Length: 248
Image 1 (cartoon, rainbow, N blue to C red):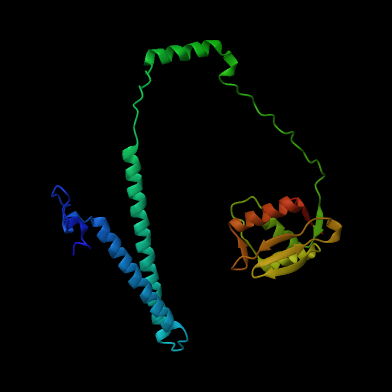
Image 2: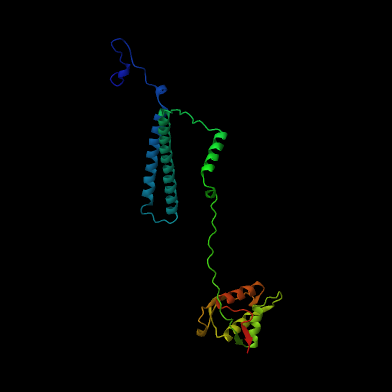
């Protein structure tokens, strides 16, 4: 007994070392032992699950074992993360206790009168026009296109369609989509469906203009604000207006 417990043997003056009991054990030691045992048990369980999955062909048992394996690995990951967080927190607290804070004298704040006086001195030394330097941006030169208005001879039905489109009155009426297609066909346009309600109207080569793509209304009637949209796009692309078309 005395060979395995040397603290029980008195020295030449009769003194003995204090008996090591649970009173002197630290909580950290118990936590370390607990974590080590939990880690060993967890990885032993993971090994058994892997051995069960290997070569298992039962479609009912395999998903259950894989789900259990996922849960155990996640639990072990969370435990390891918590242990690392606790170590980092203890290290930070230990470092923070060693940190010595040196107080610095606060800078003397200037009074309001001193700041106002300095601002006035800066305004006196600054040129008068430098405070608000407002320079009007140069306007780009306006480009005026002076082209003679074009007049196109069309049939009565075609002229009626464009008269409704380019009318400036409040009661414009409506234009059927088939009548609009017929009017453009009368001008030499070809129609190419693009899918759904999208149509592309290709002008004849004599116009030397780009094609225009329009959406057919759901009710196949061009009315209301749709008339304004169609008229504005035709005017912008081809330069048409109410005076462009004349009855042949």
